[in-house]
Each structure stands twice: as C-alpha cells, then as structure tokens.
Image 1 (tube, rainbow over the protein chains, first blue to last red):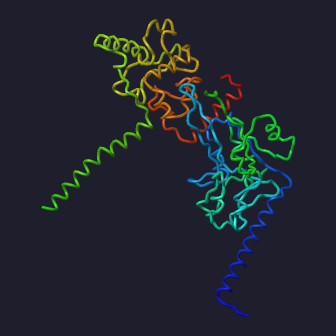
Image 2: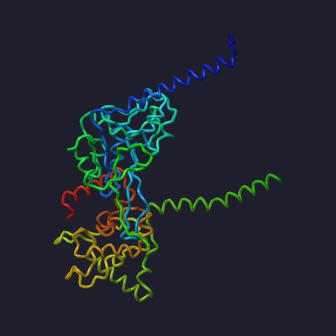
Image 3: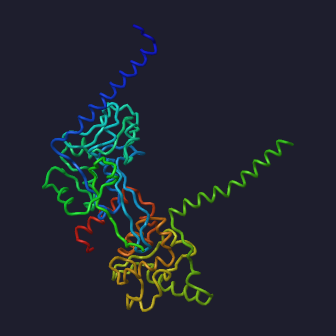
Length: 225
Length: 191
C-alpha cells in the first residue's frame, strides 16, 4: 500500500464533503414536512396608509436594535400630480417561504422551518454568522443582529406575541386592518376567506420559493397607447 | 518666507471652503422649516395700496388683541414661525382676506378651522398661494394625500408660538396617523 501525503489529503477532502452534504441534507428533509398549522399573511396595499405603526410595534415587541429592522414599509414615488397624487406601499419583511433558500443554504441548521407552524425562524445559538442566508434570501430581509451576532428576521412574533396566543405585533398595531394573519390550512380562517375574495399577488413568485406573504395590489391608472 | 506663503495658501483655501459649508447648513434648515418667499409685496404694488393694507390690518388688531368674550374667541397675541416674521408681521389680510362686512357677516372673512363656514378648498387654497406643491411634497409627503381631504389648520397652528406639527417626533407622528385614521374607520368615512 502506498500512503502518500497527496492521497491522504484527497481522502480527507472527500470525507469532509460527504459530512457537509449530510448535515445540509438533514436540515432540508426536516423542514419539508409541515404538520399542523401553516401560518401566512396578507398585506392589503389598497388599505395601507404608510404610517409605519407596524414597524415601530415590531421593534418594541421583538426588541429589535436600532439600525436593523425586521419590517419596513417602502413608499413608492408619487403617482399623479398634486393634489391628486398618491403613493403605493410595499411591505418588506420575511415571506416565510415554503421552499426557503435561507434554510437550504444554512450550514449549521440554525435557519429552520418550524414544523408546527410553517414559520421560518433562526436558532440564535446555532448561528455562526456566516451570512450565507443573507446572500441567499431573494427578498433581502435578513440581517445580523448587532447584539446577538446571529442572523435574524421576522418570525411572525413566534416567540413573543404568538407564544402568548396573540396576533403578531404588526397586525395588532395596524389602524387600517391592512394585515391579515392566519392559518392557511384552515378553510374557515379569515386569511383563507380573504384570499378567495381579493386579487392577490406574491412577490418574486417565479423563483419557486413558495412565499406565504400575500399582497393585494394597489393598482390604478390607464393603459397609455 | 516659505512659511508665510504656505499660510497664505491655507487661509485662501479656508475662505473658499466656508461658503460651501454655509450653503450646506442652509439646505438642512430649509428642509425642516418651510420658508417661501412671501411678504407684503405679494399683495401690494404701490404705496397707496400698502397704506390701505396697513389700515385694514389695524382694524383686525383693534378687536382681536383681546378675547371676544361673547363668542369665546381667544385673543390673538402671537404669530408663530415664519408667519410671525418681520416681513409678515401683523399681516392678517394675507391669509384671512379683507375685512369686508365682518363681523356682521362672518362669511366675508376667511377662517381656518374644520367647522369654518369657509369651504375646504378655499381655506387650503390660501396656503397654496405661497407654498408650492413641490415645497410641500419635499417637506412632507403626506401633504399630497391630505390636501383635498382635510384643512391645513387641522395640523398647523399659526397663532401659536410654535407650530406643533413642525419637527414632530416619530412616535407622536405615528400616533397621529393611527388615531385619526382609526376614528375615520369608526365613523365609516364621515368625520
């Protein structure tokens, strides 16, 4: 037997690759089966007034430090001329994808989909801060928490309000009832009924991530010829 | 000698930079406080008109410097912010219009309030005489969406020492949005 240094190193590399693939593989398999609830949200852009009450409520409830945010409301450029101008509002936050790229790329299993609720969440203790998930997220909603140094994002208040049996902070604070939160598996829930009644779109749906954030488009205008 | 040369160059550089800095500061302050170029000149063209204007304003002040107890109209003693500036000082008619038959007929004077007999469009139109839509949008985007729905006096108080809505804190601002829109929803669109 010829044990050269070259062969030893090549063998070591192969073993490491198998090990990594194994860990990543388990995290995917673990997260694919959702039993119980499948939480989703609707942002009705026709009702939203852009007051950002949700942004502040989220920050307070989840102790989000200054400088980062789980939730943003992005205001469009004005549409039309004064005094008839108006604005469109877009909610930038985690979409809770069913096929979440952030979960698929996480090397430590810190990013996961909660099997009981379908919520995409992060184990702060497991996160090593490699920022792979931040790069992988097509919605650009993840950040590194400056206090815990772990990746973080919206988790529908899973550990705060939801644990207490309350609605997420943003839904509670909205003065317009523009946010609807509920179980997509329950045919009698408000969210399912709203989905059946209103025109809905999902952001970057073509990427195949199956986002569970639904939006009622605030569209108006004419076709210019 | 060389030292002198160097110091001269340094000083000239400083002088060149100073106006730039000053201009930078000005932009910031203008963004916060809306100051349009408006004064008496917008209303008058010659000396005779100016005298008439001053006379007209004296008539307003004569009555309104004290409280009108019968109708509980508070005394007008201060003029806040830009509207209290020297150029604008004591110029009631610029916003309220000529006295006309006031107080015998209230309608002749433009008053600024939610339940004023002056129509909403006319009230807000008075403000728009000086404040351009571009300036308004730059200062606050919500001007665009509220202009046709509520009167400017709902938020702005020009007879207070400081206009309470200017430089409002983020928290109070959000509370204002939430409270007002909540009450609209409660009353189903009728305020």
